[in-house]
Structures are given as structure tokens and as C-alpha cells.
Amino acid sequence: MRVKEPWPKYLGLGENEWKERIDKAWAMLSSCRLCPRECGADRLAGETGICCAGRVAEVSSYNDHHGEEPPLSGCRGSGTIFFTHCNLRCVFCQNYPISHLGHGEPASAERLSDMMIKLMRRGCHNINFVTPTHMLPFILDALPIAIRKGLNVPIVYNCGGYETLESLKLLDGVVDIYLPDMKYNDNKVADMLSKTPDYVEHNRAAIKEMHRQVGDLAIDEEGIALRGLIVRHLVLPEGMAGSEGVLEFLAREVSINTAISLMSQYFPAYKALDFREISRRPRPEEYREAAKVMKKLGLGQGWVQDKWYIAVEEDD
Image 1 (cartoon, rainbow, N blue to C red):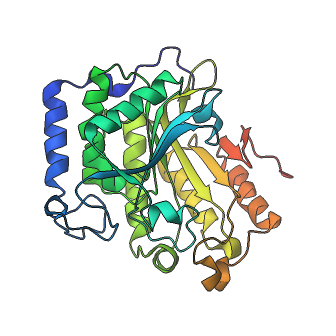
Image 2 (image 1 turned 90 degrees about the horizontal axis):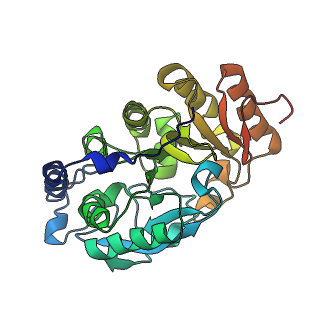
């Protein structure tokens, strides 16, 4: 689908609507329930939850990023803001110094808004919040400030897919492009590798809600994403990600037109070598099998090994 005129959804929200959403998000911090863990940490009082985040936003880096999916990076880059910490505990995390060790600096709402404006002025096609789930109140707090400064590019919510419907509903009309992971098809695997024994049900409910809010991917005449859902799925060795089940869910319960980024770049990072099943890279045939499933199911758009496809060829 192509649309000619971008119109970021958040520009349609009034002052009272912003205040209501911000107030609700902050209230969720006093006994934290921002993610499905609902660990109950009083982050407003300085306690930290399982994610290790507290009462202030922390940012590892912000920059124009050219390694995202092509409709996000385009020719001028995606304006990524990488938050520290994470609500997932993935043993194979490739960004563990940020997500597990918390390498970053505190950032006020004013500072966050300045980051957005600087990235937009560099020409970035969008503002891309990376690992934002546990930072939701701070993001909502900063966005109206950035809008008053002139922010007018789409918002990307780039998350691990372990979300609550309560949190996502605060983003309806705020986020233009959802970029979640679908990591697993089996809760036993999710528990072993990410300490999330209820990942599948929360992930699937979240994907449906995201699609309800923004629909299938829509791009402009230059191929730049304006709104919609892009799902990332990382193929793991030994079939640990359950790729066929994930893809079947998307085809049958979300949309046959779901844009899927089928990723092949897994390598054993962080503590992965402690787990035999994921102690190696996927074999080419394991990745090809997932790509064939996409074709069999009729899933018709996305990226296979970073190449845009309309239909997956048998020998891709």
C-alpha cells in the first residue's frame, strides 16, 4: 500500500489527551506494570524492577541509523534513540552492555525532546525508540515538548514484543510504525532463553493490538514507511524460535500482508554458549526452510536476507 501524504498520527492529539495518557503512564510506575512481568517495583520511589530501570529515562546513544529495514532507514537513516535496560532477559542478547549492564546516561524529558529534534533536522525519516517498553512514561512526557519544537516525522516503536495491552493502548494515535519482535512459538523456550514463561500469549495479543492500531505497512512513493506493522523474526538454530508457528500465526490471525523481516544474523553472544541448542549460527538450510514456509503460507511482503520480496522464491 502506498500513500502520498504523510501525517504522523500524534499531531492529531490534543493537550488534554496527551495529559491523560501521560498521567496514566506515570501512575503505572508506582507499582510497575508497564510490561507483562508486573513486578510491582515502586519506580517513582527509586526502586528498580526486573528490567533494572528506575524513575528516570536512560539513553545509551542516539544517531541516524542506516541498518534498519529499507523503508525505515531509506537514504537518510532512521533516527534511533537506544534506551538502556530491557524487560527481556535474553541469554543471547547482542546488545547486552546496553540492555543487561545498563551502559547509558540519564535523560530528562527536555533532553529526549532535543534528541528527537536533532535527529529530524539531520534528515532522519522517523524517530525510532529502541527498547522502549520500560521507558513508556518518559517517552510520552517528552513527545509533546518535541512537537512544540516542530517534530513532524513518524514515530517507530521498536520493541521485543513482550508488551501489555494496557501500555499499548496509551500509544494508540501516538505510534505510526510498530516494529516488534516475534521471538518464540513455545513458552518453554521463551522461559529458558528470555526468562519469559508467558511470552507467546502476551506477544500474540500485542501483535494483534499493534495491527489494529496501524494496519499493514504503508509506504510513500519513495518507499519510505509512513505507518503500519513490521514484524521481526530471528531464525535460531535447531528450530528454537519455532518459525513455522510464528509465521502461521501472522498469516492466519493478523494479516496475509504483514511485512516480515526474516532475520539471519543470529550468532552466539552474551551467555549463549552455555546453551547447546543456540551455541552456533543457524545453518543456511535452517534459514531457507523458514523462507519456504513464508512462501507456502502466502505471506507476500517483507525482507529475506535483507532483500525486499513480494514472493519468496524456492531457492532464496
